[in-house]
Length: 482
Image (cartoon, rainbow, N blue to C red; front, side):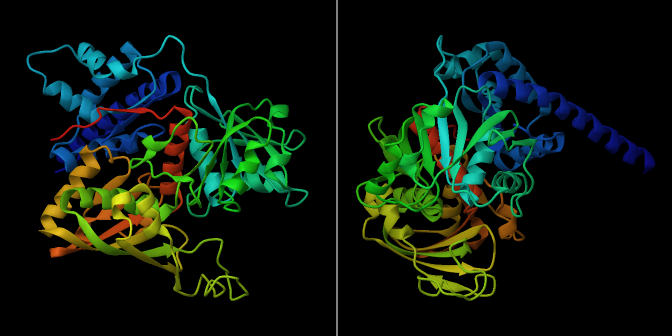
């Protein structure tokens, strides 16, 4: 028995060492070439050896076999040899694609053909300056993601945040909130504050902190910021007139709102209607966290079986808009303690879905219940379908869409009898279908969708921002069915 234990332990240490050897290769691809590597949606950048082993193990849930570390090593070495341009590359799919080639095709030759669309340009695009207007829950998560995604520096470049001064030690406190988060944990890296220059240096990204009470009162060019995209995450203005104030500030080219927009503004759910963004769109909105969570799932269900009508019930974590204890609030019921009550409130998510999926206009109703959790929410889709189906067919279709469709960055799928809301903190997918909770009786279907209403939504905002800037990484392979 002791010999068996020794052998098992030695094998584990060998695998751990092999995973450690992948880390610098993954890092070089990201820093030097802007290549984001993943295994069936599980990202490898900034992962530990254990995280890399876990991602390789996950492949077993997709194909039935664990992805071999040696196969990943061969692909990573070949990628460094051909030096592709910025892209999001699924190592597992590249391994399986090469294995499916007839004969003994050379791996480098295969990758050159597979990645022809992302081979580097002679003149790489200039980076796009980004300004965060507001620095609350979403603003700080966007900052974390932008810093983590700085890569080679050729994509989005976080240059500044704009806030109203809250006190003499405002800068230190805001840097501390970026450094420590009760829900999402500590910032992964180092943060240095320069109070004299009003800057925060986060992992090599120098962020200018600008104090202002009005969007059009800032001259961004004075800080060397030009043609910037301002991400307004205050929620204070939601119409074109209010958001257009940003465009009057020198150095601003476009505006992205992290909330549902009003009027004729385009509400974008990345993966669904991001192609509608044109260079002429000066103001774009990223809709709401709930709209982003449910719209991709509703699309694949509607495409497969048709949705005649339905109801979206959102069980949503409380937000800063609610009171910690009972106090006056202009909204109905929201004045009651968020930490002690379930609070019925309204949501515009069901109507907002129709802005991204016009075919569902008038077919959905919606409501929301705020509950005493700080993050991760759930949407319950109660649908009447055009065509009858079964629970197994629905689940298998949603599982395949989460792995092999163009919406695999938006939809995740899980089957576990033990998962609860905190298990989805930090998910970068817009929504996660809980397959074990699915109910189907012919044309009546109920689907449960978890979503990190903070980080998952922020990831969608970044994708919209990248699309506006023309820097969203090409996903390769685009679509592979197994």
